[in-house]
Length: 73
Image (cartoon, rainbow, N blue to C red):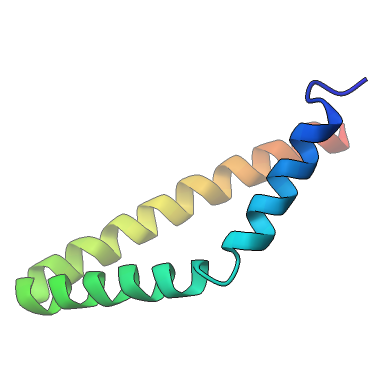
C-alpha cells in the first residue's frame, strides 16, 4: 500500500500537466537573470561560479560512484 492516497497521485499529475507549459518560461527567465548578474559582476564572479560548478560536480560524481558501489555489492 502506498503512502499517498490515489486522489493525491492524480492531483499531483494534474498540477504537473497544468504547469508544464509555464515551466520553460520560468527557466528561461531565471537563466536570463543569472546571465545578466554574471555579466554585471564581471570575470571574478564567472571564475567563482566555474569553481563552484567543478566542486559540485566532483562531489556529486563521488556520491553517485558510492551509491553504485553499494548497489552492486
